[in-house]
Image (cartoon, rainbow, N blue to C red):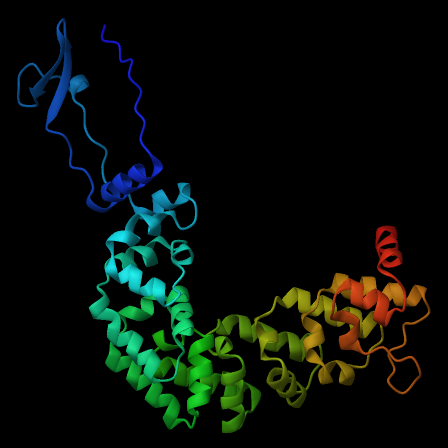
Length: 348
């Protein structure tokens, strides 16, 4: 019996390089098989009559990036290729974070197929409309598929915004804060802007303000937005005018977890007896956790400081109550100490 006594040692660098080549090129099936003889090992052709199915040895088939990425640390895949790819090196200079792109194997596979001269036009296009280089890197990191859009289509989408009286500053903010905006067609964007204008009774300048303040909302799931509209109208009892004010003040509210918003609202309105008009004036307080609100409110109750009426002495603002660190709240708002606040929290 043949005994293998040597040990194979391969460095991490060599392994990754070889593995990358294996992933990229694949390995064809072997046309040879191995059999043992009394003298050692003999290589035979598969067409030989001596070859049996049990003796055939086949090389592994090509592995998909999606399978490999499960077992490698973040950034490992890009490190395999970056020294051999001018495209990746140039994108790295823009601040593209490949370890983020690797989370989507299809996106990373797409990046590997690119030639820098083919995407230079996209980068210059973003630069020409006023996007800073580091922001270009962030956009590509979040949405590398932007690089496969036709430049003519991108120009049309920017022209549409300009036609709708969005200023250059507005356009830069929109594209810089929503990497997916430019992958939506002009028709899609027009329909979505129309949706918000119709459902909230917005004027043209209000539509522009909404899109600029929270561009991600415009391309967000409209089904989720409709659920939030129902919540504001039917479950909170807001009028159309009040809903419009809330959305213009805090548009991100339409993207927050609906159940969490409702829990916080109910605690403010039903437990703390805060009037609806007060909540409407400061809608961002609804984005804070109900558990934090409850803990801080009960601590003030214990100290006999839960006074939220602005017309009375020792008034505690609602935004002051929910924002800031526990240290700030316990010392500056509750006029107590972090130690006593922590003891109180343990008693709940």
